[in-house]
Image 1 (cartoon, rainbow, N blue to C red):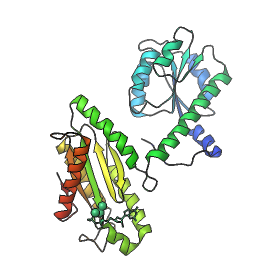
Image 2 (cartoon, protein in one colour; image 1 turned 90 degrees about the vertical axis):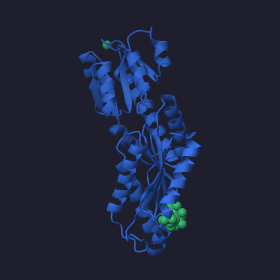
Image 3 (tube, rainbow, N blue to C red; image 1 turned 90 degrees about the horizontal axis):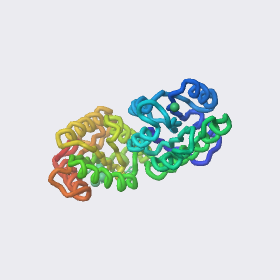
Image 4 (cartoon, rainbow, N blue to C red; image 1 turned 135 degrees about the vertical axis):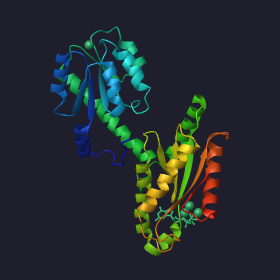
Length: 309
Ligand code: GH3
Ligand code: MG
Ligand code: MG
Ligand code: MG
Ligand code: MG
């Protein structure tokens, strides 16, 4: 989801980030598209589509930093498009500025989640400054979110994120009558690893393990969290036991395949153990967490470098 940790409040960084931020223009009049691009292209990366439907399609594969949305368009209008886009998890935090030619829609713009609007005919200065202002707020908010919810060593989500995330996943699964999986991952013999190779080397491998887990997860909604020292939790929404076993096998295999030497391990290279639990038959997130942890313990007892469920 494109998160990364960066310092807050560095003006030079902000200018670079603004320059690299993506603005999606949704507008059905070619002349307006041309004008908007002329105003914005020197300062931001600008893409355009000519309908609400095309905007939705575009957002399936890209996440813009800001959307400029025309209200009156053939087919799906701007208001309807905004409502739909705001319901997508990846887009829900993206500021949407409406471009409107009448005051009629003003209140509705706010109601459906718009952050601002630009009145047609627009001026260069107003378009530029509205876009710049809302992009700046968006980028700074992203940075704060990253600082709060990402683990600074490994770059994956932290425990604080887990607490709010798991609640939502649990609620959503129950609402949709779906299963979801929670997987505990723990590095094997990691205390010995630190003792033999030193803590700095340990930190380095911890980061590599985290990123290997992350890369193994294929779907955008799959999430890895650093739960504690050398323990990670994977949350897989809309996934049953069978699916989660396949993912966990891949995680174990991919980490083993890194072939990180570990002379203190029975396997002579760095490995992990896993415990899997899914919602089916359990009450909710507290129980699922406990069961996954119990299963992890069994994997350890059975010799490590394996999964249990
Ligand atoms: P097991 O196979 O049973 O999991 O053995 P283990 O040694 O991995 O487990 P234990 O829980 O006894 O030790 C975990 C170790 O992980 C303790 C600590 O040295 C190491 N560790 C935890 N957090 C960090 C960290 O942030 N950096 C480094 N380098 N090591 C860490
Ligand atoms: Mg129009
Ligand atoms: Mg541990
Ligand atoms: Mg332990
Ligand atoms: Mg361990």
